[in-house]
Amino acid sequence: MAQHVMTVDDSKTMRDMVTFTLKRAGFQVSEAEDGQKALTALRTAKVDLIITDLNMPVLDGVGLIRAVRQDAKHRAVPILMLTTESDPAKKAEGRSAGATGWLVKPFDPEKLVDLVRRVCG
Image (cartoon, rainbow, N blue to C red; front, top):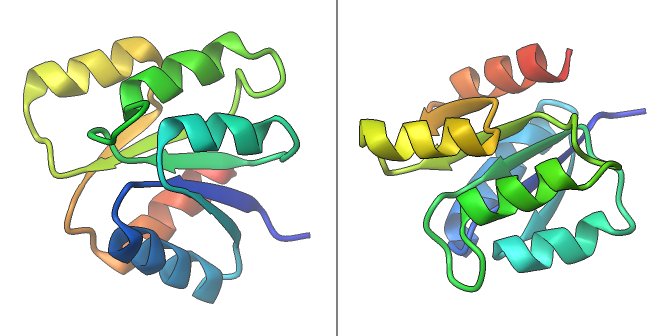
């Protein structure tokens, strides 16, 4: 069975690009447009990896990571931040919340797939 990746981003274009790239590489992909919708979906979904934007309405990426890390069901799921932010303080905040890794937009499709494969095992 294909590994399941959830992509969380308020930009439909970005979600579409990530979904297209990962589906083409053989992953199953689901989408959420903000952290709160991702948490709602996670109540019934099993995912192998979450890729989240940092800046989103309703619940941002750091808030999503903190909530996922408090949930016993998903606590160990790797989480990658995919964002335009390159500020070291933001990276540190993401890391302290529990982010596994960080990618800067725009992303290179091959690098994204390679990283996802490494993180998912």
